[in-house]
Length: 405
Image (cartoon, rainbow, N blue to C red; front, side, top):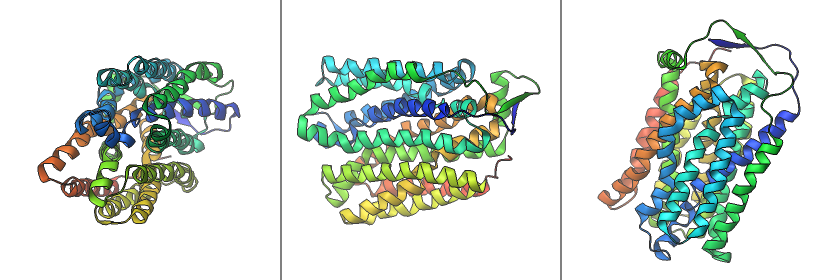
């Protein structure tokens, strides 16, 4: 298996250009994932789509991720991050334009969402491969953190800007604006992205090669990797569920309007974006990962209780800021830890494994929240279920050991 040793090698400032272009494409995937989550009430009343239909426009993303995550990770490891992300950029741009042919047709909107979702795993699973290709070892979590930052930027636009665009310019013009940015991503990526730097930032020491099947078998025997996978399963799955239904939860429990709910969703993601900068940098500096996983799980428990009980807009706004900064921003650390445990040879497939588990959980949790809501007649039962999941994540985080450097 290939191992990475820390040596004094050259780095290039162009690594930040490569990362910035990746961030643009990655942000697009998240924008389209949550394109309709911030206006689900509008789509129910104005377009006469059911709540479940609107939810499926977002839920198709984790469902597709469940199927394509491992293949996308293998493509990233074998073909390189440029091939993988470029494929995702093309799928995003092409299918973003598809919806413009019949913007009020649910079938056309779903086909567009499905096509964009096909490209998402090829983009997101490549971030660890980009990190080990362009960045030195002591910038692992930082590079992945900035890559994750892009995800939150896309979410902010999808959740916060979409209601404003629909209100001020209309539903169709909103689709045109987003489609233009998606199509632009294709030439932008291929013009500014290189396969690899002239001078590698780290040196691979080759001991022996193993097949990908054997590599997966080896990873499946590592205790901490398995535990980390279950933490990712809960974290990513719960995040998908909360973001998808947050506007309806706030409206039903506390009477918060669509625009104010959009503000809360935006600060949730914006604070997560800040956390993706601060927490990975702090983790790299301290060379510690585990304490941040523990804090994230504990904050998740507290914040879901506040989401259930907090009555005012200001309380929910503050709660979203805390939840986003400490809990949501833990994703880059999960990905960095997966690469540290698996080694650079399997950086792509280890990230794909975590994303597979998380999005697999999301496929179940997103509709389950609505099912529990219908059965119980409110959102109390689904939120208590999420609290239970965070308690499980906290217990698992306490069992995980720090990765060896």
